[in-house]
Image 1 (cartoon, rainbow, N blue to C red):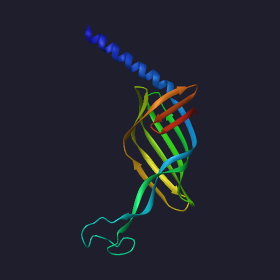
Image 2 (cartoon, helix red, strand yellow):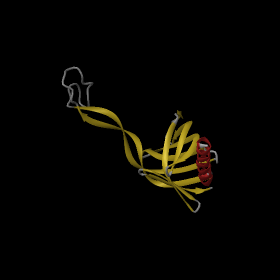
Image 3 (cartoon, rainbow, N blue to C red):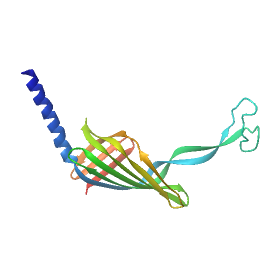
Image 4 (cartoon, one colour):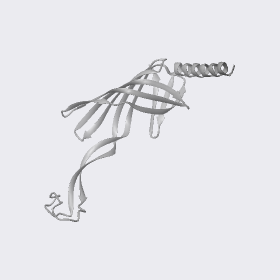
Length: 180
C-alpha cells in the first residue's frame, strides 16, 4: 500500500511541474539598450616587481624599467543593444537566441550572436536552463569574424510571470520578455 501512495505523490508532482512549464511555453522576445559590463582588452603600465636580473622583458622604457607594459582584459561598463528570442516547448526543450551589439573602441562595434539549446525546468521559483550546447559568432564593423561552440552549462534565473510578460532575473541582470 505504501508503494502505491508514493507513486501517486510522485506523479502529482510531475504533473504540477508540467503544468507550470506550460504556463511559460511559447515564443518570447526581449529588446533593450543600456549599460552592461563588456570584456575589453587594454594596454596598462604595471609596476615591475621582479627581484632578479634578467626577468624584465624591457617594460615601457627599457631593460630594468620600474614598469612593464601588459595587455589585460577587464569588464568595463559600455552601451549595449540587446535582442533575445526564447522558444520554450511544453516538454522544456528550448532554443535561446541572443544578439547584442557592443563597442570595441570609439570607431568599431562587435555584434555577437549566441544560440543555446537544451532543456528548461522550474525549481524553487526559478527557470533553470540546462544548456546542452550551442554556438557563438561575432562580427566586427571594423573587420573580423569568429565562431566558437558553447559548452554544456546550467543557468538559473528568478522567474516572474505577469500579464503576458516574463521577467528573468539574476544578480544585476533583469530581462523582461513579452509573448511573441
